Length: 325
Image 1 (cartoon, rainbow, N blue to C red):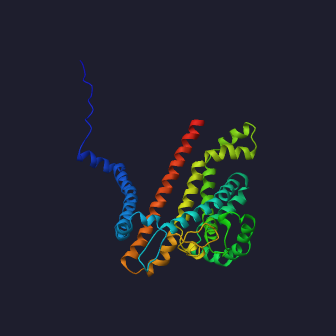
Image 2 (image 1 turned 135 degrees about the vertical axis):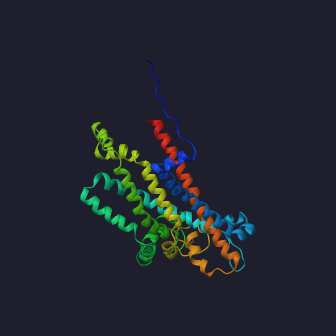
Image 3 (image 1 turned 45 degrees about the horizontal axis):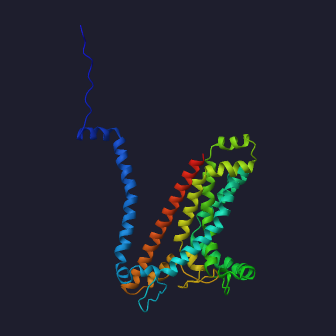
């Protein structure tokens, strides 16, 4: 007698299937985590919208001239962002030029070459430095870094490299160079900490393979370990750049707060974050206030553009590395 094969029940669809998935927990967890992830996008869009809506007056009056004008005169109602964009970019570049070699080198030493006890001790102090408030760094800069720059570093640079426009002019101690140095000190712990973690995540087999081929300890580190961890190192650098672009108090205390553009790194200047912090509470009139808000929008967009360029650099580097391998 022939027996019929059992037929499987058709999959449930519609509201009943959704209820069953919610009961299992997977769908509920997916919806909750989706809401958490979407909140990041909502906050970003909300920030841009609020900055855009609150800066309507200067956008309509100055247009793109707001970005190219170097005149900042609240009395006459003329506002231009170029000196602040210039100061923000210059100080951030100086900070990276100093902090990246020191930070990556220190991370390589702590992760690959230092004994575990020394590495653990140094890492503790590095993470402690990352938690120091920026105003403390500003006070440190005023009482130690500014006299050091004014009496020793800047006179030495002027004496040896004074023929270059960036090292010409009078020495004040306050200026772009000092602000860049204090930013380098502040961003250094981020580069060291994150780069060290990226290097420690490299598989042990990567090191052992290089050593088995006859490489020295340094050759193994530089040619096998560092390229493997390059994405994490790039991430630390761009995080440090974001910190440098948005830093306020420490830069405000040492940059000199001069809304002008100077070729010399010894000259005083201004950054976007510093001018907002200094003048927002004293702004009178809607145009003045909204011009400061538009500076915040410019800083936000500048950060987005630089991070997008960084992301493209990472993608290009990854593809090049994959093609070579």
